[in-house]
Amino acid sequence: MKYSNRKVWSNSIAVAILVAFSLPVLAASSSAETKSEDAKQNLASYARGAQAWANNCSRCHNARDPKDYRDDQWPVIMQHMRIRAGLTGQETRDILKFMQGSN
Image (cartoon, helix red, strand yellow):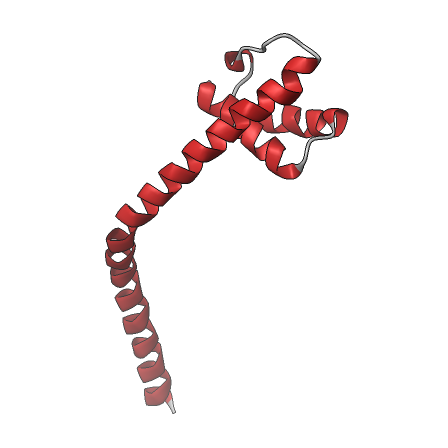
């Protein structure tokens, strides 16, 4: 019985090592495609955020310099303004991306 437990344990370790060394290779092959797609989505989100900011935020107050707040403070501000301005979830995420991207 002891032998079979050791064998299972060693096989488990071998599988874990194989997976650990395989994941970076698999990730690297698809990471270039993923980065390109992510960059396109981020740019689109940024542009939608700029437009949503112009349509919604500037109605009530003057332009806020994104550097007035740190990137980690903007999500709290945006959740507050989502409620106050009646923004959709997507508008909130886009405006957040715009404010953090302009920072």
